Image (cartoon, rainbow, N blue to C red):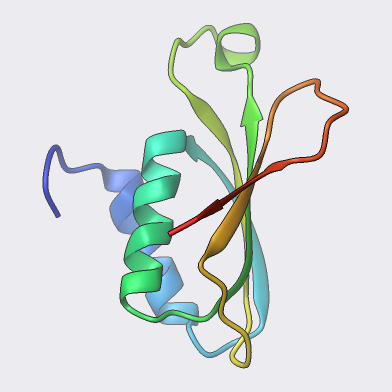
Length: 101
């Protein structure tokens, strides 16, 4: 890993690695940058993520913080792997925005 070490990033990575090969859905609050790094690492390691979404939140309104944050939701499935994820903006009625790695 390059750049500053983030404990939450380390926890996400260990959790993903330990659950690889199982069918499970997880959701965790995190900085958006940490979520992107974790997804990128998981795909590089070929961890079977079937679906990933980042539901952005207004961290200033909810927590008094200026960080770009969201609820990262991902589903691990041993039979499916995608390299795409969708972001949803807070309070928006619009469909999410698709991103690919």
